[in-house]
Image (tube, rainbow, N blue to C red; front, side):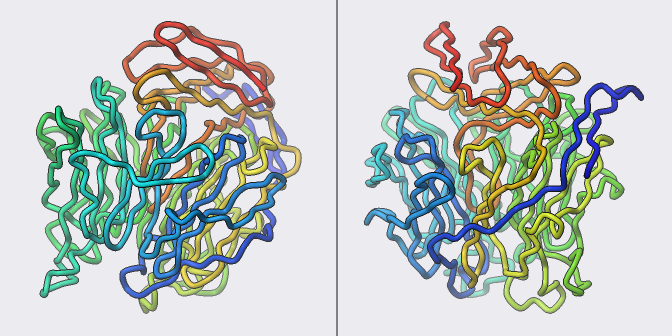
Length: 508
């Protein structure tokens, strides 16, 4: 039994006795992510409600196999029902978002080949968008993010391209350029991002809460070899890279995935970067976009397998934040797995579940929780699949079956889930900040599309609360409008809808 207590200034201000996390495998349709070297990376999964029944459905990349849509029938029952438009090969990953703000979630599908923007019909049917100026191109695309800028009706889309397959001198030092599609007067206008350093994850985020989302890109040093680094693009009229004069610090790693979350209650998001070797948790320090690694003693590096007997360095891929015990402290899930047969890296490399303690440090619970899979895991998603208030897991494996894990942790704390939306463009309020005041601290959450490894989740934001029985919530909308604090009942799903200046809150 874990005793969870939040300590502020030396005083215990809230606690809950949380049982050890426990996950069990669920029987789901067989699906594998397969393929040659172009599918060593990728294997993402999009989790979203494609038919409006409030149950999250699962769209998983297949690589050389067909992608699959698994419909959620409730109580962790999934059926493979893939419409023709999604029965695609060459899929690396996918991200859900409402491109046209019609209330139905769409998909950005990343491929080895032509990328696709697919319009959802609200009944899990899809068809290609007709978007002037958008070009899916023919690339090896491995990263994606989206945001809404200014008063545009359509999102700004970023596609990260990996190795240039046509470069005869490749694959090493043959990183491809990436591109941004911004809405213009006559449709989308493409801007090439160069230099490219082989991105495997990207995320639009308002890193300093300054009112603008910039583009963080995590790059794979295995192919850029030298001269490259992690990147942060300032989304000015002409995007530019932040540099030392802005406060940006150089970081070089074998970058695989990104996630951002305010872990310490200061209102600013920490950034977690997965890698071959150590995983990097970074926080803002100094002026400008100056990020520094948190101390090794925080327990977030997860740099070697914790069981299985293979002492070589780990290879991290997807990362998700989420409070799996609902104790009010966010935890970290990281998928692991050798690229293929890299002798310097661990072959038996179980996935991590890093549980946060009251002092902010993390401890490994993957084995205890039943998540120590030795398959080569890639993409993943953390979502409440059965609507019981506990976060479940989906994991895509390379050349091994997809796994779905049900969270059966006992004696969990209280929780809320909150879905926000607004009329007009950017219906799902991408770029908004959702704040939950639980008395002893405020939990801040930015609404984003992107990050992870080749896939993401769209749905209500889940907050664990521990023993707290009364909370207030407010939204800071993308245009800066702040709602008043609203009381929200615990252990319920709530929605907050904005129509102009009018705010409507409802709870299930």
